[in-house]
Image 1 (cartoon, rainbow, N blue to C red):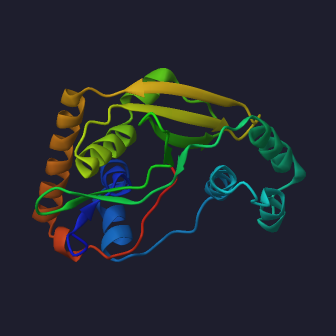
Image 2: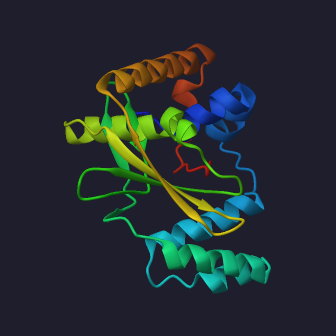
Length: 207
């Protein structure tokens, strides 16, 4: 399975939202653009969730942020509930390719957990409609060979430090419909000649 080409949600998002030219630069040529400041802060908050002894205050200072960001991180730290199982890489076999998943966690009741940092709050509708949750649930279902349909998105607001938790669900039909999107994406890459030329790097784009 390691030698198979894989499809991640980040690849699909880039292709569908930033266009084939940007996709070619990132995933064929391997040209990475520097992270934005919100992405850097988001990475620090993710590390705060993942590591109980993480010195987030030092990381914030070292990154050049003001003390306001420390106050926000303090609020998030005071209210966070860490996931039962932390971030795991999964490559789910789909015959001639793999689905790559890097969800933020999983709880013991088989609820997939995803953390999102943003200055503007998420809504229940946006959570219910995001393909990222569908991608991760489908990958877990194929990898574990059992249905994973439930997820929670934890939204940490980077302006005020408030945390909101949204429960969401995908039916088996929802996951089948999303799988059709994946197959179409793969077909598009093949038609453009990108499929066999993708660079091999561990990709993660904070969305």
